[in-house]
Length: 121
Figure 1 (cartoon, helix red, strand yellow):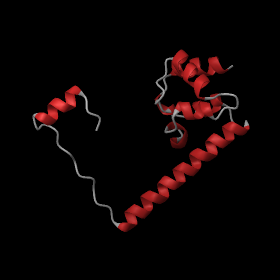
Figure 2 (cartoon, helix red, strand yellow):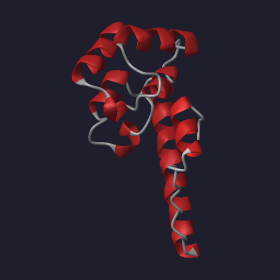
Figure 3 (cartoon, rainbow, N blue to C red):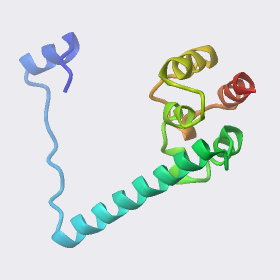
Figure 4 (cartoon, helix red, strand yellow):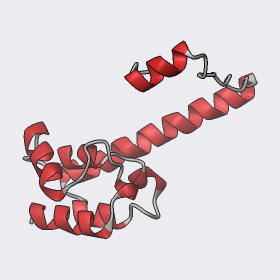
C-alpha cells in the first residue's frame, strides 16, 4: 500500500484492516493460471493484429464494451501497437484527448473515443 498522509494517519489510529485472500485448491489455481494465460495470449494476438495493420484502432475501440480482451486492455498499450506511435506520441495523444494513461478501453466515454480516433486520422 502506498503511504499517504491519510493512510499513515489511519495506520497510526489502527483503522486499517486487511482481508485474507481465499485459499484456492490446486484445481482452482490451475484453472486460474490457464485462464490468465489464455487472456495474455488473446491480448498479445490483438496487439499483433493492430501492429500488422489487420485491425484499426477505431474498429478495436468499437468492440471494447462487448469484448473482454479489448475492454481490459489499456488504451496506451493499444496505441503503442500502432506503427509509428511510441511512448511520447501516445502520451501526447492521451493528454490531448483527456484520457488517463491507465484507462482501459472499456472505460472510455464516447467523446474520448471519438477524440482519440479523430486525433489518429
